[in-house]
Length: 274
Image (tube, rainbow, N blue to C red; front, side, top):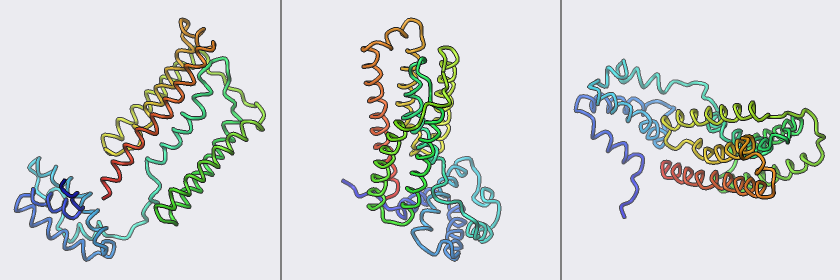
């Protein structure tokens, strides 16, 4: 079995696909980037190259030269790319929205499956506050320890999060009740599911290792259960013991889909980072 190529080897293979003219420009650009303090670390430089070079190849396929693509000489581009800037925190990405959606899928939507059972606005607010605190603690912890300790820390935080939410569900009074009616609730749930699906499609086209696909199975399973509880032909079934069993099985499948698809995406990201 062939060994996996390093990022530097991948970059060299991509460079070979450039035309002689574009190779000359590219080599000057890489040499100029190496002089930038921001890219003094070779690994950082290679990752930046891996980010830029595929875009140049796309431009070349459209018969655009490297100079036209970048719009200036190599030294000027290197100065711009290497300029000190206020970089956004590493955790401030689209990925941050995925846990929020998982919270909605795991806490809010299951409570909205049966139209006769209202959402408890106060409880959801308290639980979301607990969730935000857990996320802040996890992000803070992840930035200060090794990858192995990150895993341990997140496991501890997740267990504590579940316990805190379980306790909140038993002590927070039922206030701010919200009913998702049969018609209005159905429309809302469908619009929400379609909006999240559209966002997932948009983000996945730009990032092949996006986390968003991990939630789609859970999203549509939960939405389908809620719609069955609102359609006249099936609403009666959903309030019986058989309906409760169907809801329970659907919830288990929804949670399992997040874990299974999420594991596949995690492996994809690990492969990409190596």
